[in-house]
Structures are given as structure tokens and as C-alpha cells.
Length: 156
Image (tube, rainbow, N blue to C red; front, side):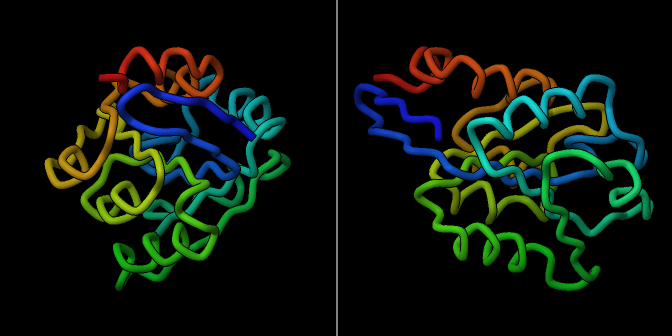
């Protein structure tokens, strides 16, 4: 668990990390360098989930052997499915990370939504739904590894 009190924002008691795959953890279906080690390190404090439509059909193979659960979604209804996934886990204990338009409700529902700009860009809807925007998924993970960075970004 990651437990951090943020002045003017509230207390975050995070138990689950929910990530999109393509555009967030991967580029063109290929897992970004360093992501595997970071996911495994975060799994010491959070239950890690990857929820994806798997555009390139590579997520299961790329994430095999990592300490995370992978949920493949059908191409239709991904926006609602990702939101429902976060809600079912208990949104108050979820940090969600994504970049796409289909991530917007997931980012909004989570206690902490982090949007990643990345090589595929960041959908404006996702940007408006999140709490923090970062340049790369490694930056999102660094916020979770050192929660005082969350305090610096979110405090009033």
C-alpha cells in the first residue's frame, strides 16, 4: 500500500495500480525499456493490473512473467469496461495510468489518475480527466516510488 496525506487534497491509500498498455506501457505493442523492472518493483506495494484492448496483440506475451494481472478487453465498450474495472477494485484505492481517450473514465474514477503524454501523445479527454500529467510512464512510476513528489504536485 502507498499511504500519503496531501494538504488540501486529502489522503491517498492506494492498493491497486491499473495501467493501460499501448501508448502507456508500450509503443507500437512493444513494452518500453525499463517498464518491466518498474512494474515488478511497484508490485511490492501495489497490486498491479494491466487493462487493455491490446491493439497489436502483444500484451500477454510482453507482460508474461511479470508481477501483474492482464485483462484483455473487447474492442467495443473499452471506456466503460476500464471504468468498471477500477470501480470493482474500489476506486478509492486505485491509481490509474493511461493516455488514450478510452482511458478517460478510468482516470476520472480512480483516487489518483495519471495521464502519460508518451510517443503516441495524450488525448485531450484523458488530460482533462486526470489529476497529474507526466511526460513518460517512468515519471508516473517515480511519483509512486517517492510519494512526496505527489505531495509537491497536488498540495494546495
